[in-house]
Every structure is written in C-alpha cells, then in structure tokens.
Image (cartoon, rainbow, N blue to C red; front, top):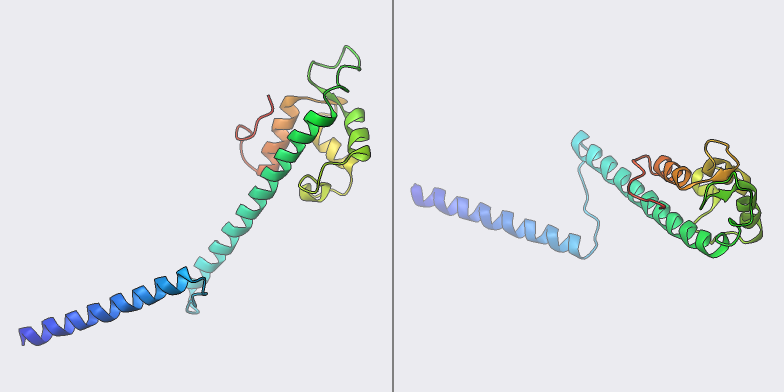
Length: 158
C-alpha cells in the first residue's frame, strides 16, 4: 500500500513538473498563455494591461522630458538674456517660448497632444502655471510633477 501511494505521488510530481516546464517554454517562446474565465484571472489580466499602459505613458513622458530639455538648450539660451530685468535669471519669457515653439517646434516626442491640449499656446500656459509671463525651473518641475502624477523630484531642471 505504501509503495502504491509513493509511486502515485511520484507520478503526479512528474506530470506537474512537465506541465510547468511546458508552460514556461511556451512563455519563453512568446506564445500567449490562456487564462480561465474566473474573477481572479480577469482581475489579473486587467491589472496587467493597466500596468502596461502606465509604463507606456511613463516612457512617453520621459522621452518628452528629454526632448524638451534638449530643445530648450538649443533654442532658448540666447533668448533669455535679451529681456527685462524683472525676469529672474535663467527664466524663459512665455512670449519668446511660444514664438520659438511655433518657429522651431520640438520633435514628435514633445507634442501638445501628449498633455491633452491642442496648441503650443496651451502648452506654454501649462508651463507658466502661475501666469507670471515667464517660465522658471520651479514651473518646469511643477509641470512635470503634474504630468507624471507624482512628485517632481524625479525629473528636475536645475
């Protein structure tokens, strides 16, 4: 009796390990794993798709941040010195920023539609969040913090 029970358990263990190996091989090959139609499986699939969307949007915001940083260095360094004394050092006048966006727009990584607006004017309004007439490093940090829905310490102009 004991031998029969032992051999039965060994047989089950072999079947289980072979099915686990087959599943991992299928996942490694990129084959889609089918899930049963249960509450738990559906909740897992829903969570997995939501995580993928968040990751995609995070990558898009990081690309936009990089492009805006590059674009500001190329297009705005000389324009900040030619304005009034009431503008803080390293601040960018909103009018100059808008004009530069319209004349030399950044590449497609930084586009108005990414932030839910339709024009460069609206993007400048988002960047100049306190409507001072210029954009500072603090405004940039606040803008990116709101875009990422997280603290702005992750991406800093400074």
